[in-house]
Length: 272
Image (tube, rainbow, N blue to C red; front, side, top):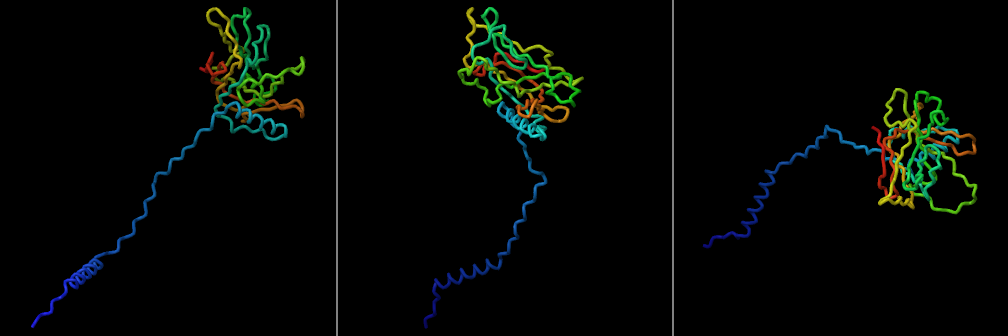
């Protein structure tokens, strides 16, 4: 009598089912991953330094202060204290003046020497200690040397475009914006000019006089804003309600320089 022979395929299926059942019995639930421990070290937060004030930024702050003063409001400006600034402004636009001509203190000038063989650059700081531009609370100041920011309606450092004169009696616009280098009593006197002007002589080559720049020259004022006795960085005043207020900023001046129109330095003075 023939014995029944099991099909090989049925054996394989049964073996596979047994292995799957065994694996299911041996598989244990895996514990959930532990949450990542919080770092005990706080993240480093970097604060970018305040941008350096240029001519446009400084003039904008002066405009805001002038508007507040005219409205009888707090001028403010305390937030400017400590800010660095680098201001360039054009001077010597047009033909150099004659040696006999002098400009107001606080403005840079360029003029021919008497022999017309060299150009003389000069910047005499103005004495603002008793000018009324400084507040009454600043009696502790020993000296205030002023520098006007000429043509405050120009936000750039370029010379204005040449325009025909309206009449022969046209006068320069009064100065209304400036920087005041303040020196406290018993404080450091480095950088103080004591009435001495910044001066430089430009000579030509091969015995020829220098050719004046058609784009004028640049005065560079560099330093940081500080504050008057009331904590404000800017003071304003006006003789009448319909006059534009004159505003000055308290500064510590670190560098004064003369440059040509291309930014090539001609001469410089540094504090200390």
